Image (cartoon, rainbow, N blue to C red; front, side, top):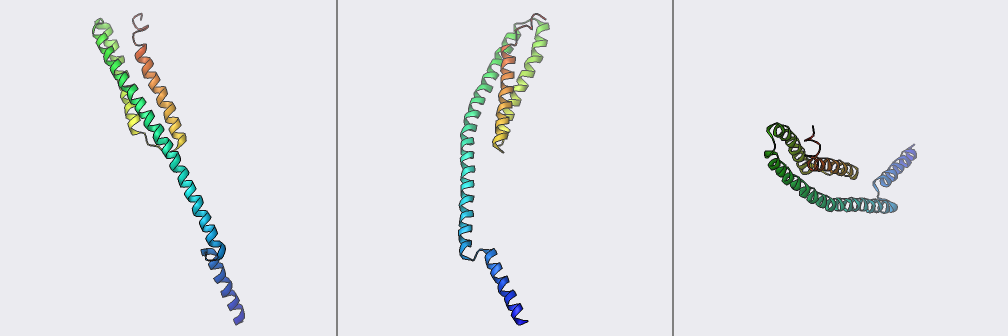
Length: 148
């Protein structure tokens, strides 16, 4: 009977050593795990570094476009002052909408936080679409509006 308890105790001790990594191969597995973990972190750092550069370039370009839109909206306001009263009211409402969209783009750009590459690509696509909408709205502001 004592022999059974002794064998059971030795087996539990060996199982415990294997689980905690104190056997000869345990160090190898722990080291492999650490190496893989380091590689994964390095991959994330590389992705993040690539994103940081891409984000910086994107933000600078978008900022330039937003500033250009603000300038063009200011030019529209000067042209509106030369219009008739009836058209001034109509144009001023539309200019306010363009100004708000441009301000929203600026806010969206400043508040974006990187979460994943997919979300970044989605943000970039949507932002560029919205930026193009504002740019086209400014560009085509006076076309076909005077005929209505």
